[in-house]
Image (cartoon, rainbow, N blue to C red; front, side, top):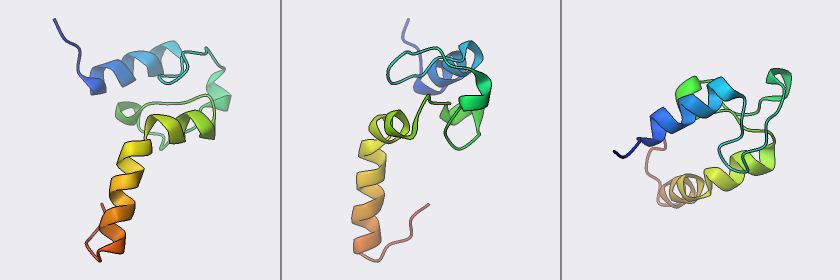
Length: 69
């Protein structure tokens, strides 16, 4: 059975494990939006790498003058 990305990110959050590099880190070092469904990362680099495609799409929309959510 396939696992959804949201379920994967929540599982990784509960384990205090980075969804990008799989490093276990202390809760105090968690980086991200603070929303469990969006995951918690060990560094800004991992956060940016994991979300690179989404950030690129938002940049394209912003250049085209469309609303970015």
